[in-house]
Length: 318
Ligand SMILES: Cc1ncc(C[n+]2csc(CCOP(=O)(O)OP(=O)(O)O)c2C)c(N)n1
View (cartoon, rainbow, N blue to C red):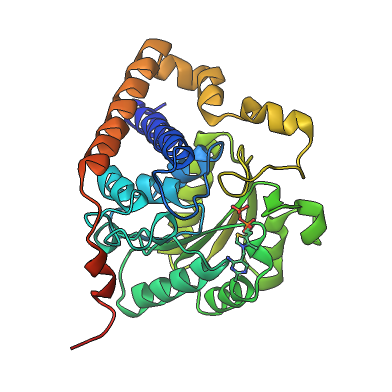
């Protein structure tokens, strides 16, 4: 096992975990305005998939996008400043959690419109093809979004034009408050790719190495001009749909022990991974990740809130 890759995967998962635990804490304290949707439990999806990408590849994310943005290289400081609604944040503090974008890192944006990531990534993939680049684009979305019109249109167009696009579905069993069986007509989301004539693969979203492996294959196929792949990563959403969601639609067992599906614990249970990155080293990485996020939080909180006049800026063109 490649030690650099294994450490990178573990580190990214730790950073996402720490970022979201901090976001949850300060949201509860009333310091973060708006809504936040956390991807705790789904860290392996973002970490494993983005580690297979190059800096000039693109990703388009959804409302549960902190992990994707961090894993693709967005700055924890600028992300945290956005969550705290500070002018130094990615969207000048006006967008919040669902509107984080960093074009310089290929992050086309988190997105509050369900399914929209597929349309954005489709456009990026078409531009890559037209400009004859080697890059690829990835659309992250949930199993709920997989039933939207735009995702199906994007799959059809990507297949016809053999675009360098990966559809990455994080299948976490709930879309808002509805369990999978209530809103999806097939047993697996990956099977939907067959309707458009390209491969659909299912992967264990708790296993960061399995995710990375599946993504590497999909990216290689995209770069070869063979067209799209749909990856369905089976995952678990530990928290509610949004922070504060009472989750009455989950079983008491699910509510009480959400962490039993845990990609970080799973990493430690993996014999090859735990001998490549032993427990002591994992502890060091976790501590470094925590201090990176502590720094981002401290910096964001130290910034003044924007002036009231700022709401009138960038509204009208002179
Ligand atoms: C076009 C659109 N329809 C509905 C909503 C409301 N909404 C927000 S999240 C969500 C469910 C998304 O579920 P899924 O795609 O499975 O993602 P998850 O929340 O599970 O990560 C819905 C219906 C929306 N934001 N946009």
